[in-house]
Amino acid sequence: MSQVRGRKPTKRTRTRKKEPEPEYFHERTQASSVIFGLVMVVAMIVAGAALLGGSLAQVGQRWASTMDGASRSIGLSVDSIEIVGLEHVPVIARAVESAAMIAPGENMFRADPHTIRRRIEETRMVANVRVYRLWPDTVMIYADAAQPTALWFDGDDWAVVDSLGRQMRGQRASDHLDLIKSVGVGAPDAIPALHTALQSLPDFVGQIEVARRIAERRWDIELKNGALVRLPADEDLATGIASLARANAEGALTRRALAAIDLRVAGRIFLTPNRVTNRVEEAA
Image (cartoon, rainbow, N blue to C red; front, side, top):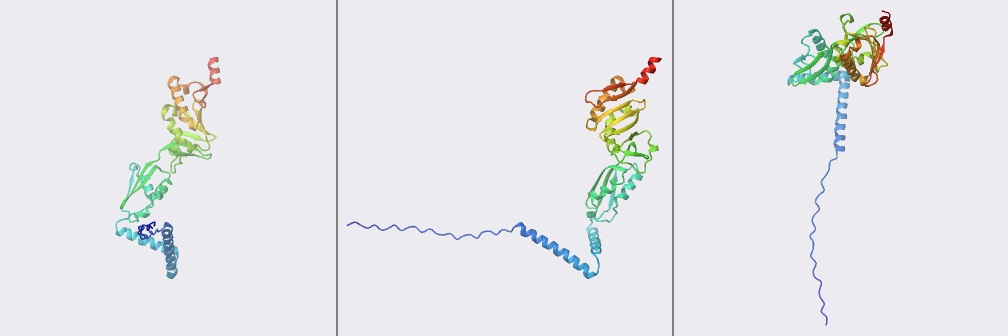
């Protein structure tokens, strides 16, 4: 008889208990809580204003006063205002301090550097304005006195323009007759670049009768001897002036009897002789 073999007992696998899945708190939930909290704060302010019979503006003023008092109590209020760069022009320094509109004792958090800089720049008396808060109690203002750079005829009268192309208030053109005279639409904005380019030709500046702005893209320079220097477009202005400087060094080009010196084509100088002068010389 065949023997019946029994089945081998199978090993029982132990079942592990499932670990509880971690809970995640989404940012959306946190953001909604924050928004809800802000809404509740605003609602409480409105309700408080209504109960007190006041307006939101009054509540804001009271809140600002409270914050100012708190900042003073912990030493975060303006104690000193220092102006650097205008020591030699005390009149302008005082005007800058007045325009800043900050006073000792004011909350340092309310002395916003960007706002203060904008107020100072609106005086049109200074350039390169920088404002810093030095915690806990100092406001530093750095500025350079705007320098008269050119005169501009606006169609009615002459105005003084500074190195940033801004008209300078309180400056009389009659006090700056040695500056370059300019005319034409958009001339003030383009004066800084022209002034910088002409630094390589200091003798040439004294020969200029007037700088005329052409189509708001380039300059024509009328010289005192009657010659006309046609400069290239603004993007090539420095290159054109450098070319004129080399030509002047070699042959005093701007002092010759010429009707026009044309620098509008890169790498070339076109000369137009003064026919009237030539005829006089021939007749003599």
